[in-house]
Amino acid sequence: MQNQLIPSNWQLANLGDISSDISYGYTASATSEPTGVKLLRITDIQNNTVNWPNVPNCKIEPEKVGKYRLKQRDLVFARTGATVGKSYLLKGEIPESVYASYLIRVRCLEGISIEFLSSYFQSPYYWRQITDFSAGIGQPNVNGTKLKNLSVPLPPLAEQKVIADKLDTLLAQVENTRARLERIPQILKRFRQSVLAAAVSGRLTEEWRKAVARSEWSDNRLDDVCHSVSDGDHQAPPRAQSGIPFLVISNVTGGEINFDEVSRWVPEAYYNSLKSIRKPQRGDLLYTVTGSFGIPVIVNTDKPFCFQRHIAIIKPNHDMVSARYLAVYLQSPKAFAHAADVATGTAQKTVSLNNLRKFSIRLPTMDEQTKIVRRVDQLFAHADSIEQQVNNALARVNNLTQSILAKAFRGELTEQWRKDNPELISGENSAEALLERIKAERAAMKPVKRTRNKRTTV
Image 1 (cartoon, rainbow, N blue to C red):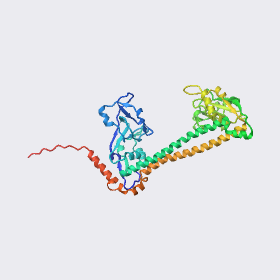
Image 2 (cartoon, helix red, strand yellow):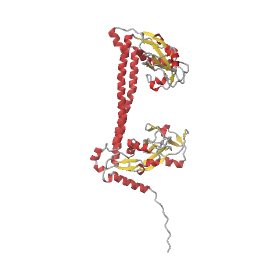
Image 3 (cartoon, rainbow, N blue to C red):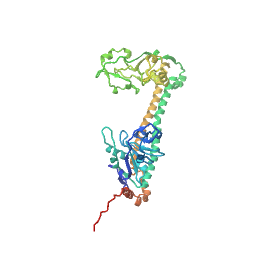
Image 4 (cartoon, helix red, strand yellow):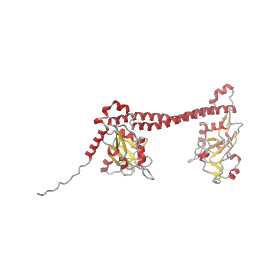
């Protein structure tokens, strides 16, 4: 328990000293047959819950069930793999079940609050020790011997219960806050989609049109308002160690061109040989047509580059449509729904160039396009600001859980309680007296060695 300060009336104990059982699970294979008992595995514990109906059965000799049987208020630990050190407290109704060999079961002696101990196994002090204990090159693991040597801060029993109750309340509040915050990005996503829908339907600028007495919108196909709609070269381009960046879909799926993640280049001679309709220029649009289809990206660089055939290039007629308005249209739910309707294929859906060129688009005047883009940018900037605040708040909430746990096991959450209840933490109620009783209980549990009487001769 290095670097952890605890109140003077607390004690430090090894987990092995306050436990009646620390043992590995049963080595068996799960079976789909509806016979035997349930076999709890590491993978069955998800989000700190167990869906018992989905836990498989196993075949185990009847005489071994008792040794590995699980019961309420057992603590089980993952002793290997990605979740090494994660613990789970069994609550509620438990079917007849045993636990698998990659789990360790811990049962505590009387005088130890299992809820207190379970909370401690979430704290930074616990995880610091588990990190030190973990061994193994391929997969980190914690064995039973190391777990027995785990250092645990031990308050008097009454204080253990108070800490566990306070943590239940505080951590539940943190979780509720986190859950509410995590719902906001989805709400903002729907907001952005509604803004786009309003933009391309004319609702976003309805008041503006009334004010200027304009209402003219024209119905067009995409290729009517563009100089060309093409895609990348269908031939495999030559590779080069450097030269002209060659983009793939993953370089544009974030909504902008990501040159930092480019991992492929082509010779400059190859780029120069491409048709002009396949050479991006500032103000063109890239549009993903395969797999993650339906993502438009405005080219805002003069840097030469080329791209794979799974990306379309749209060269707008800027006298008819602005690149920004066209991007708004192609992001809209209406355009994406149309793309989804015409996409073909099974493993990877593809929007053909022929279908892309036929996309219908209602165009307002250039003045109104400017108004729409400006309004969309304003609303999106507002949504982005909210999302950033939410992300900052989530980061603080995630840190708050560990901060609360750290305070709990430094005794800070119960400082006033100790002042108000000195009789519950002293004398026979002290942590020191509790440890003495536990030592006596453990001694009583040890089997008595039987010795043969020596024969005496007269």
